[in-house]
Image (cartoon, rainbow, N blue to C red; front, side):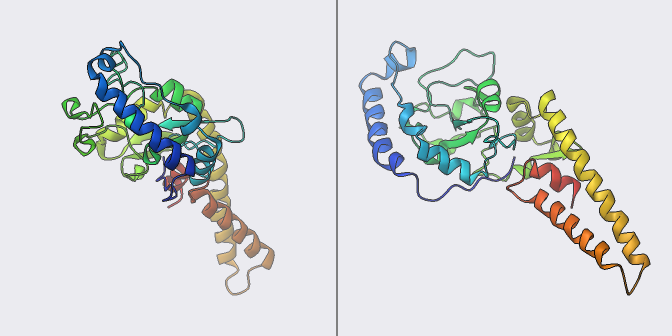
Length: 261
């Protein structure tokens, strides 16, 4: 995971229709809160607004076409999802818990609550899970204070994920035994076998480039004052490739940063 920086201004559809729909949801909830909490009634959330093409494109661009959670390049192989950090329709503290409703309905169209994610992280990993350090502090309506919550899932737009999640080779681990890091890795499946295999293959390429760079540096040093120009040029190209692998836009950038200081 890398830090996600969204554009400060939300897409127009969220500012116009999203705000109107948010007000409607809040009014409907206030009219019959017990019915919505029991599941007798459901709040209708309009996917056409939060998943509008302009919203998805803005998130995708802000995240360099990568999943906000696993850092896979999504757009080359899948459409991806507009994901709600705090789940909109219902929530679970644990995977075995019964789904509690109505969820964070008032954040359904909130720009700060939306990410671009791959279907596996979103639909198989996170789903409606949103564990808190103290579940008693959970905001259960738009009248409650969100700042009292202590999410155990990393919000990459608010917290630098690299403080909590690092890599030993291709395997993600919680830095400094971070509870938030461990929950995030486990909940999202950041060490699922297929993802580890993909990172391992990419890591092998990076390791080859690092070893070749070191070899070239030794050869150039041996020539002292007059190293061959083609060798110097080749070293520069490799340095450029390794530097690019560390940039936010690169796939699995955090793993690359752990390999290449």
